[in-house]
Amino acid sequence: MKIKKDTTSPADIGDYMKVFACTAVMMQTVLSLVLSTSPTYNYQTPIGIIYDLVKFTAPAFIFGILYTTTRTTNQNTLANYGGYMKKQWSALFVPTIWWTLAYLLIMPNVQQVNQYHDVGSFIWHFINGNAAPHLWYNTMMLQFIILMPFFWMLAHFVRNNVKRGIWTLVITVVFFAAWIGFYDLEVFHGPHEQSWYLFDRIFISFVIYGIFGVLSWMFRDKLEKFLKKAFPILVILFIAVFYWTNKELFDFGYPVSLANAPYYKPSMTLYALLVIGLVATLAIKHINTNSKALPVFHFLATYAYRAYLSNVFWLQIIWRLGGKNLVNVNPILAIIVCYLLTWVLSFASAYTFHIIWSKIKDSSMRKRVQESAE
Image 1 (tube, rainbow, N blue to C red):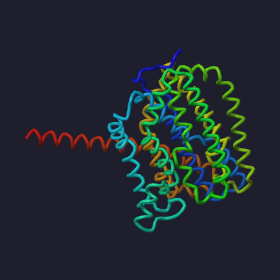
Image 2: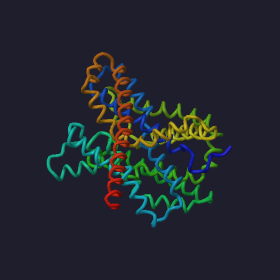
Image 3: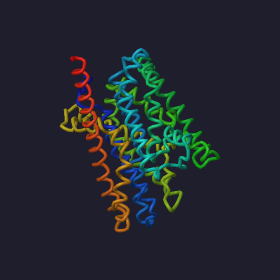
Image 4: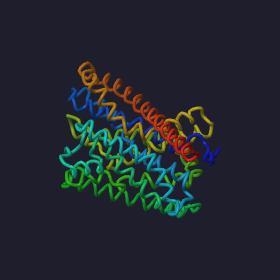
């Protein structure tokens, strides 16, 4: 059976990636906050293991965005860029602006690296992603949105040409391996660890996942055949690489520092790609069997980005209202409770704000129509 090719399908592989990524990134945030209370080593061990387990979020999100965008816009050229950016402005940039302002003005304590102290540093924190622990991702992800014409060009270049697709894949892997090697030597515990930390939020550090997203849609039939045959091997490799990532993290000793589990390592890159492959396999199975889960994933994917933006905000409120005290009872219980409440509030707020904004726009539109009629 082949992956459905019509664009009216209730969900695609990209939707599954966004939902899994958003769900997992909220767990990362909770784990980091609980670990900051310095629980005993007996609790730090499972926290580190779970953190490694969900350390695929940014790669999966980038893959999902590029897969879905290529599916819906691969025919586009630079002439379509204006209309494309207009849609992305309202869908991605506006929520980013509002939530970044909320963090900087309402919760300035969640800023990273340092605190803003004047207009210039406020603007700099607004742009560079230091306004909250998770907003570094926005700085990186929005670069892919802005650079989308280059990915359209790639889609046009490889269209129906397997050789070009293979060459693109090989060149991407070689380039990215060199970049990861450079980062490992110069930045990660290297001489420029503090001064070059912004390298973790430029698009190059995640470009392999974007390019793979484009190639996966353009060669979706071949992707399905590959995943169908390789699934057992992917599972075995997943277990092996997951052990590798954990060994690397715990080789640094205790207390556990989650900074020792960055995305920019060969182990983490392989792990992210394997998770992407496994999630894609699940999505393909659901698509081919017209699973009842498709509309659910499509619905959640619609609000995943906005839920992601708000998750630290809601977690901070939950933390202050009792989550922090719950850590003293049992850190694992605190993780479960804080995570579930954060997930529910993040998606509920994303949906609620969308409904409110839609009603405001509809009301404004009706008012303008009425005024023009008069």
